Structures are given as structure tokens and as C-alpha cells.
Length: 115
Image 1 (cartoon, helix red, strand yellow):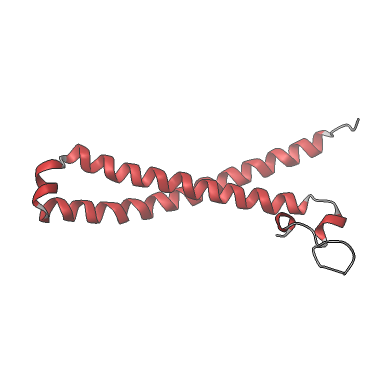
Image 2 (cartoon, rainbow, N blue to C red):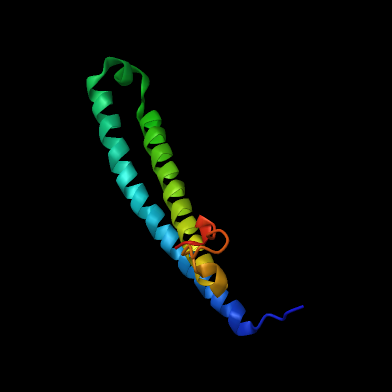
């Protein structure tokens, strides 16, 4: 059984915090873009389309915009976390797994070890 050093745990914690921060920033950017991208057509349709004018009150409009923005946040944050996890798992992989070139012996390594 191997022991885990305090420095190793601190390093992994710092990496996790950095990944979380990057994912939060990516999600926040996605929210800003999605809010504008969903607000403009929602407000325009309420002004121009009789059905939307009759059926979408301000609460309904806000729900549409917030739902789109929330979905964009989670999609962007999840995508960022997964890409960072994939990159860092490749960095910590043993050297014999990092060599993804096919040298004619056996089979090449799976694609998930490639950066």
C-alpha cells in the first residue's frame, strides 16, 4: 500500500481549485452571451407577435431567459471541467501510456490518453 504525501494532496487540491475557477469563468461567459442571445428574440417576439404579447407576461419572459442562461452555464462549465480533467489525467499518466504513436508493435493506445 502506498502512502500519499501532504505535498501531493496540497498540489491536487490547488489543481482542483484552479479547474473549478476556470470552469466558473467559462460558465459566466456563457451566461452573458446566452442572456443576450435569448433576451433579444424574446423581447422582440413579445412586441411583434400577437400570441407572445397575449401569453408571455414579464415573469414568463424572465423564465425563458433565465432557463437558457442557466443551461448555457452548466453546459460550458461541464465542458471546461471535462477538458481540464482529460488534460490533467494525460499529464499524470505513466510514460508508457503517453506514447500514442504507433510503432508497429501491438496496438496503439486508446484515444482518451491523447491530449
